[in-house]
Amino acid sequence: MEAHKILGQGFLEYVYQEALCYELKLRELSFDLQKELNIWYKDLLIPKKYTPDLIVEDCVIVEMKATTGLTNNDEAQLLNYLKATKKRVGLLLNFGKESLEVKRKIL
Image (cartoon, rainbow, N blue to C red):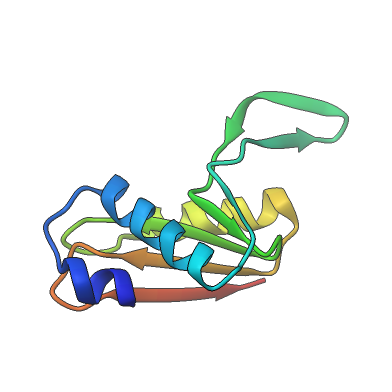
């Protein structure tokens, strides 16, 4: 919320990502930025990797957008990240609107 409060809307996703990482560091929270994730089908490793924006404290997947509104595809993307990592909690953040748009998903 702090990043959106200070920056407002209109920047590219990368700017909000950097601001959010800065805020996480200030709060001494650990995170992985754009960590590549393996996808398995039975014993087959799929060559394409998933790359969520952030994994915070090794338990919350954070996917960020800077668009006019979140879509079903954005939500599906977050759910796929949760399934691939076997994590239970995900946050979908959209910085592209006047107010920060937040959706939380729990598996």
